[in-house]
Length: 143
Image (cartoon, rainbow, N blue to C red; front, side, top):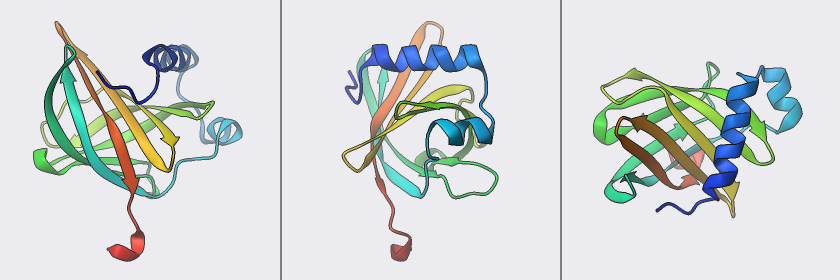
């Protein structure tokens, strides 16, 4: 099972975010500094607690229209909407704009030891899908 940060804490933050609703840019900035830069890595997909597969992902917080997720192996691209940023945890919802990946996932980010840890959860009855793992900052000079 993913162990990037305690599930209880993530659920507590997410439930608070859903109760409060989407944050405006002003309230998000007042609570936490925004995430920046581009990140990439390979995350692990768990279905009902079992490892299903590993998935390459890219996340960019540099797009002026908002953060973008890319899943190159599935040819999918999504856009993140900030719900809340609180105590080092950034909560987003993800809307897929291109490809056949599923929209509506709750996505949590936390920066830990220089890595961006992602936890993405999507419940599709009766299956609970969690995607989790560390991402590394992409050096813009390496492009």
